[in-house]
Image 1: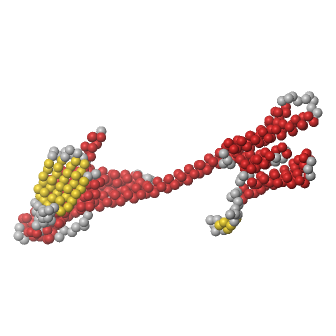
Image 2 (image 1 turned 180 degrees about the vertical axis):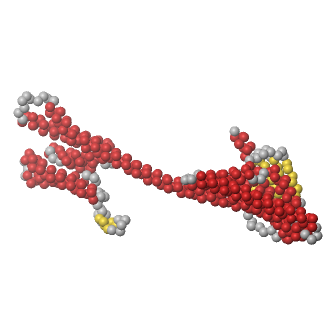
Amino acid sequence: MTTTGAQQDGTGTTTRSLLWWGRRRSVALDVGLGLVSAFECALEGVGFAEKAAIPVPIGVLFGLVVGSVLVLRRRWPIAVVLVSIATTPAEMGYLMGVVGLYTLAASDVPRRITATLAGMSLAATLIVTFVRVRQDVASADFDPEPGAWYVPTMAGFMSLGLTAPPVLFGLYIGARRRLMESLRERADSLEQELSLLADRAEQRAQWARTEERTRIAREMHDVVAHRVSLMVVHAAALQAVALKDPQKAVRNAALVGDMGRQALTELREMLGVLRAGENDARAAKPVPLAAVGVAAAAAAAAAADDGPCLADLEGLVGQSRQAGMVVELAVQGEAREYAPEVEQTAYRVVQEALTNVHKHAAGAKVLVRLAHRAAEVAMQVENGAPDASGGGPAAELPSGGNGLVGMRERVLALGGVFVSGPTDAGGFRVSAVLPDRDGWGEQQL
């Protein structure tokens, strides 16, 4: 395993790895410091050789080797500091000691190790400085003689000056670097979170748009399908009796006109609600998600407030009777007001069930049951087997197959229960139970 080799950067060019430095500027700085330290130790090696009574070239060579150790300060700061402490008695390597202590304090080495080595360096420097100052005082001719405090005070100041500043500055630089790295990591984390939030906001906006389109499609189906189905039934009856009973034909024609006008009125109301929701969405800019939510909520609330209610069931049943259907309405329990969306959903379920009878079971008898219970309202529409003489085939009503799906979606959206299926007698039954939301709110209060 080697530490050097060719590597390819993001631009496609091939560069050589820089060992443990990572940047050319760091290489130049450390090599420069190593050369200066080696030159310093070589000069100080001359004096060391004279004191140790060894050849000067050996002292110079020793100084060069010791000083060049500073090049390794980023990779092995502890080794650099230990070498500087070991050479302190030889009075060489001051630059190496200062830079080594700074690098050690700024690195990720545990603080107890840094404190121990800094203390050892301080003690070694204090001892050497104390001896050197005392020798200088003894060899010099002072008038008057300095006091006993002079030597330890000067030694203390000099040792602290060589040890404390690099350690404190290194601790500051290390703490600042770690703080910047922490802030950079937090910034990256926040950027990722913002990206996730933006994606989720876009998903919620898409979901809100999908829900609104589904609701609009369901409302259009409920409004148009029932009215147009009755209009087709009356038109078929009008065609059958036009020559035989002109008076009945006139009544049927009037009914067709009334139903057409009612369908147009309901369509205009729905379009008005949609335009109001669109205006609310534009007013809510520049927050797209809030605009979508406001528009959907406003449209849904307006549609629920302006839509039909349970009190209109009698008129709904009457329209089917006028179209020739035999319909019986049975109400159980004491009638009361429910939340607007509950009453509208109950009305739409009965309306769509009667529409399906017109489409698929012409001439069948129908029983509509409505039950007001303690905390819910239940409705059921059950028809018998189709009667071939009821004119069903002549009406030729198309079916998109979305009626039951829309009813189920409406009921389940309010937390209700929806069941539909054929009966043993050959007919069909639609049942739904809706919770009384106003009653729940009073219990929670």
